[in-house]
Length: 211
Image 1 (cartoon, helix red, strand yellow):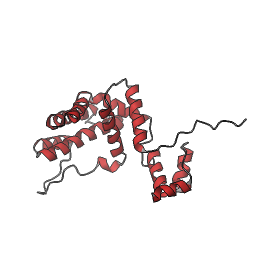
Image 2: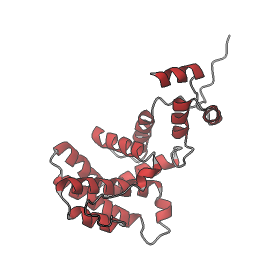
Image 3: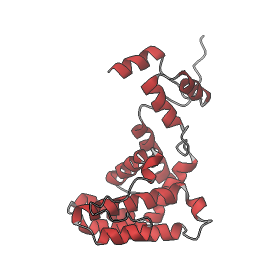
């Protein structure tokens, strides 16, 4: 009788979205947080956005008058409150999302600085609350209100994900998988195999790139 194939290997990730969906659900369950699907989807999209670390350092605010971009959280919040409706919404969303992500993934580093997680939570919670107030769409306002009221709860969820995933470094499993699928890199494939991730045969990768 043939032996069953080992199930110890990590299953092939179909997409970063699918992976993050699973991680968010695990994080919410582990922290015993009950919420609604739109909040889960928002967290999944946030994680996908910051999978590219450059998004943490993108220009906060483009001013046609050539005024200096806000460089601190407080400046960003103040600039948002004094901006037109579109710019205000964009800045508040970036501020809320960024403080939430940084608090969850880099909270240990923040605890060693003058500006700690509590400060990020205060600014981020205020940003989401203001965003909920100026958002016309009721369902989205409900999402922002949820993050405002439970900011630290969702920081804990992201901290859980940070500790149980490979998305901290440029050589994370998701980046390697994306690189392998896009380029068919043999080096990326070898590293994925070392991590226990099953990869598609080269011919299927090539077909995927042609599609």
